[in-house]
Length: 180
Image (cartoon, helix red, strand yellow):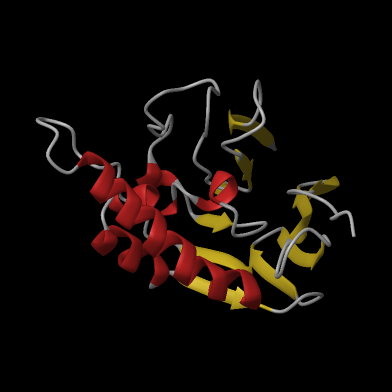
């Protein structure tokens, strides 16, 4: 088992973590870095075609905003999230792509990070689940999404991992709670 951090490690935004277990690579979140956080270009620091699954904690762009880029650059697996997050993603990823395209319109040699077509392609790979549903993701990996109380559809992602004689439970909280 190995855990790598590709975002939100030295800053607040751009949540993106990769868990390796049983020969599979599982991405947890794939968010855009926003504001003055650590990178300017939001490029992916890994090979998207080598990722097997992507689990998304919630629809905020700093947790989901690079999903269209992930698909554009070769990810072919399922994007697994709660049903309500999937519904919000259908709005937010299209909007984010539209902003990407319009902010770069008229600028020479500046391409958008992704397009509306890329967002549409990412949405085709969504696999919605319900809160509390236990999913056997692959050999030795089970996952469950539980309510994080942050926004509609937000979740903590619980993973139970078994490799040989080693068993672990890892929880990715995403963002928690909401005042009032």
